[in-house]
Amino acid sequence: MQDRRGNPVSRGSAEALDAYDSALHQLNIYCGDPIGTIDAAIAAEPDFVMGHLLRAEIFMTMWERGAVAMIQESLDKVENLLAGCTGRERAHVDALKTWVAGDWRGFQARMDRLLTDHPRDLLALQIGHLADFYNGDRDNLRGRVTRALPAWSAEDPGYAYVLGMLAFGQEECGAYAEAEEIGHRALALAPDDSWAQHAIAHVMEMQARQAEGIAFMESRTEHWAQPANLFAHHNWWHTGLFYMDQGQTAPALEIYDAHVRPAPQDAAQDAVAEMQVMLLDGVAFLWRMHLRGLDVGERWTELADRYEAKNDADGEAGFYVFNDMHAMMALSAAGRDAAAEARVKVVETAADGAGSNGAMTAQVGLPIVRAVLAFSRGDYDAAVEQLMPVRYGAHAFGGSHAQRDIVHRTLIEAAIRAGDAALARGLAEERVAMKPDCPFSLDLRERARAA
Image: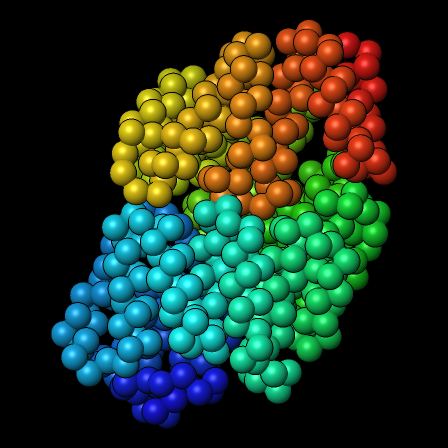
């Protein structure tokens, strides 16, 4: 049997494959309940291998320690079915085993090979693309999709989502005109493509087109801001940043309260609010305000509470250092000194560990986490000392250019507060040269000059 894109499937009825495609579509647009959809198919057909693999890879997108057990559960169920599996299915299994073992770079490589043989595997393409993002591999964010694209045509189901991925890869590689054009092509084919929407938002962020960005995001909310869209939080985050960098703090905080960190209405929404990927946006939003000395009320308390709970109950500390950086910001800004110091010790241990996180922690994560703690203590010289050597290598611990900009903002603010006027002016001038029309950057330069 084959799925809708012609990929071989070892087991599964037509009904199971329909459910697989529905769940995959929900994953493509980050909307709905793909786990619930595929669980129903697995309950009806427990030997549906691709159903188990889809389920495992949906959990993998969380990039949390808590997902490991869920992935292993799916792998255990597939283990006795391997003899009858296709080569593509076995390749998915091997890649997932590599990820569970902590070799995230190895997972990327295995997905590279899988897509070489099966470039029309939309699941592998999207999961590989996200792995490139979490590992800060901007070249493969574009390259992975570019290599597969010749096997696709505009008539293929899912083609628009391939274009959306390519748009983001182009943006992260600095090809802004190409990214924007491809992103609009994707939206013309699939108006609900949240990833393509977000790729264009990234272009506007990098080019400091804040007013245009607000208009673009708010004119299309019916497509990307539905309550069931898990990615809406992040697209609202982009919208709020556009307001913030124009100095419009009040509407930015309104977006934060209504959309980035809304008060959960039920247990399911509360569980979503605890996910690391949802916490990151809240922290990155408030830390930008924190650097400006703006009062955000009790908003830090909610974030710090959740991070302390995840550290103690779920053991997320030390799993992925990009998350640890954001945890440190929340704990530090909320005045949780003991918890912040404990987090640093966990990160120090992780830096000596094996696997991909150990390498990225030692390379850039640990200095950045230490810098955040130093900044919160008012030791701005130490923060500068930690950040200067790693500011250009921060891609090694994942995220996007827009997300990692928080490192550069923290460095410049630390230089200003340390009284290092020459460094502050130099860094601010560099920023303005890259974003000459950004109100925030211009204001930062004036503050640096005044120092």
